[in-house]
Amino acid sequence: MRKIIYGFKLLLTLSSILIPTVSCIDRLDFWQETVEGQLIIYGLFTDSEDIHTVKISTSAPFGFRPKGVSNAEVYLIISGEEKKAYTNTGNGVYELHGLKAEEGQSYALEVELEGSVYKSKFQEIPKHVGIDSLSYKVAYEPFKTSLDEHVFKVYTNSKLPETSEQLFIRWIVEEAHYWQLLWIPPGVPLPPPCFIFDVMDPTKVNLFDGTATNSRSTEKLLATRKINNAFLFPFFVTVKQLSVNRESFEYWQKIEIVINNQGSLFDIPPARVLGNIVNTDNPNENVLGYFEVAKSSVSRFYVTSEISPIYLQPICEYIQGKPSNLYSSECLSCEGRAAGRDWTSIRPSWWVYD
Image 1 (cartoon, rainbow, N blue to C red):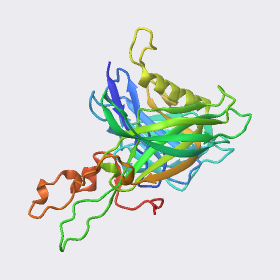
Image 2 (image 1 turned 90 degrees about the horizontal axis):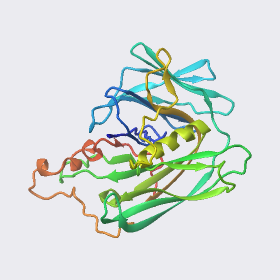
Image 3 (image 1 turned 135 degrees about the vertical axis):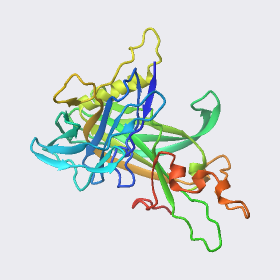
Image 4 (image 1 turned 60 degrees about the vertical axis):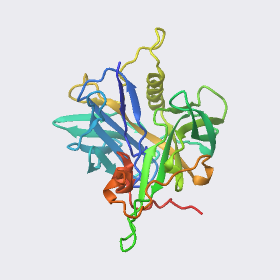
């Protein structure tokens, strides 16, 4: 059995749809026998005014990241007629600016690629979404291994609207941290800042089924991550609560089952998790991923190094006489620090702290 891990970073991601420099979409883990070159399409369109992102890739051999597909034409179809083109930004990332989901309209995704047309089902935006009250906790406990580690945990106490309509909720947790590159004084300009973005705890699927309970509130542990030098400077957490339709919710339920499946004789057998996108000329083609339309609410907070119970060692401090090529790559460039994550040197508009 192979474990294929691939990341769609909106991010929002996530998901997710933040400003142009923060487009993290949560990662998906599929336990399955995946055929190399299998098409993967994932997109999220919400009522947010931020940038909406579609990621297109093909599955790679075991142990390698999926390969971005940059020769597609991508369109948002509005109520069956109007088309809005996504902008190709390279490496399989397509962005849509200046548009948001509205009640009463239906939306679908269309992808034209090498003579084939892929389409999702039409969806309408749900009418209701809840509000999150976020908190965090620092703990010392087993994490990823059997060894105890200092970890940072994000919680929500969510208040959901009173409504007779079915309510299905999914949460995406994104993180962002500042990083200062090596500065060699005097006479050398201060290097540009690095803002690094990622999905926190990407294998955790956070869901709430409003049809299974009468409660209009829920408390959840949303994400856990190890405390490390990302907390040297202000560290921001963004939580997106998404109100989705039943089909989308059931898709993520399947993803959760696949991720948590341990392979015992009595478990549900691992299998491909197919979404709502099909090849209109060849419906038998297995297309991975999903296009979902959601109503969203966004909550955000930040912490500083003061929360860390351990000393966080600066690693990019200038040492007189030490050649720059002897410093690690994360001290010399934002790309080196990001190590495949999203990054920018432009301060996000919401990056405000006391």
